[in-house]
Image (tube, rainbow, N blue to C red; front, side, top):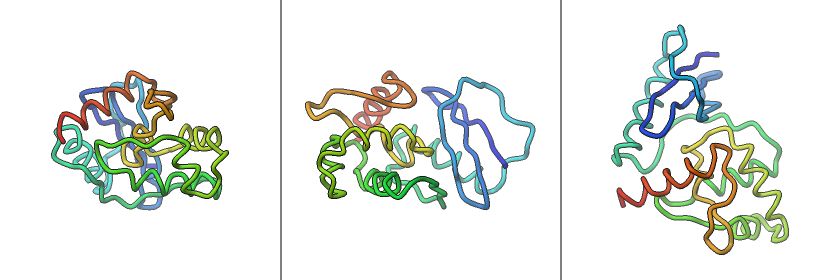
Length: 152
């Protein structure tokens, strides 16, 4: 699968394409690009993510491949509706999908989100507004939220 590593102000991002759709965006500790030539779609994804980090892009326009369970798909669909610079709690997502007691399951679906930033699971916080859980780590979650606040 074609992939590229994008250096960002926070940490490098691994971006992977499969069947002309973006199927993975994740923070990585790798610093060097793969030998592979970036495809036009990977170049577009890199450009849009660079614009995001500069505060020039608040929404993404990329073909996405989100493989997961039906429950995960429901959660990820809700995540994509959270406005830039705003947060929502796990309980609210559980309520939106009609399973108000499924807060922990929502958290696990967030953890399995394969498309960091573009499917903004970093915008989900605890019921009291606290930063809890993020696959990339709480430091990165805080930095992403602060970045968005800076450009509101």
